[in-house]
Image 1 (cartoon, rainbow, N blue to C red):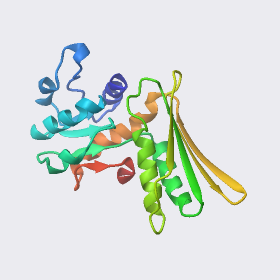
Image 2: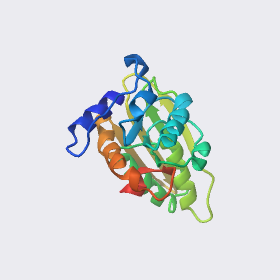
Image 3: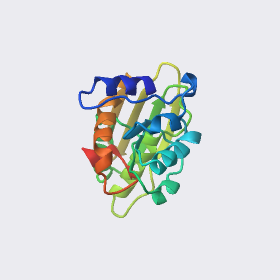
Image 4: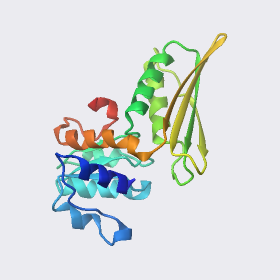
Length: 208
């Protein structure tokens, strides 16, 4: 994902790539913070929090696509803004919005999320976010839908929201078949993170 983000930034006329932090390149995060206005983090759950705290302490805004870690310590962090999105694909954000609306009208829901076999967290951040939005959309709030996780080679990122009611079902599905699907959302977040009035802010829907 990091290479795809770098290519997207390099292709954006209003952005300049100032560094790449990657253990495989022998470059640490600390080495690139001095020249950066915004850091984009697609790492791992066990390092994302420390990375974000280091960015904020250095006065560098951070856009995070990593999921599966606790955001609570970031709520007290001051000095720069933090934006987190479980999914940066515009279609996935629309799927979550449509699912929340449908939850008000259908009796029961289950979520099936399918990802490549290298994804570390299960269920995915997208599925958990979808479940939270659907639960909050009902009046009174309902328990979050059950989530089923699939990890297989050949997949990228896919999710089905299946709603059932008397004599009918409704299925909402989103498929990311290439990582470039996330890049418009990533670039939007990079452009907007410095303007946030709340930090950390979770969910690309807040920027659309």
